[in-house]
Length: 222
View: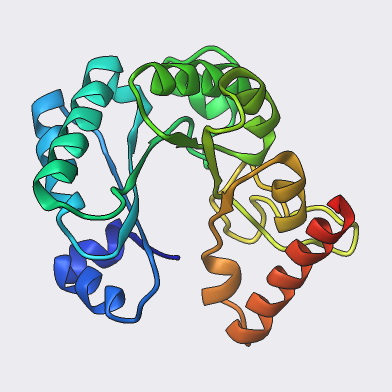
């Protein structure tokens, strides 16, 4: 899939979605809706009408009623459109740019993993299909929410010579990161990879290396 986030959508709008959809790949519309229930419901309904959308997300911190309204709006949009498969709806738990100190600054006192699991459970209660969460929370979320619950992992960074993911050094704003292999081993259904490809001297080679790492992990599982 291609991920379309706030930067591209603000610059080009739905036209970007339509253009990428014509390439034949699915789209993860990463706009992280967070507002009152009726506003988010309207946004999700509009997003679901765009072509090629397979994943849509919102912020779990918007609360149970906001997430329920979004789920219901997506169901209504699916019935009216007659599409074969409706998009999956995901809740963002805790942004991977936040560590415990940053969470305290905004009044959240618990550890990222504890809060992410609570928000994942709330998303499941609201009828969402899964969550966006750091690789560090995947195992706990899987245990709490079950095998059918989708988990999408951002904050994926290439391995260093020591085998660890590159973190917040060199101007990177991600705090809770993992390598592609670590995310897959933890149980991620999808990983999100942006800058390691778009900022690489050779994006094609960077992509191939990531795919090879995933392949090696999957082979060891068989």
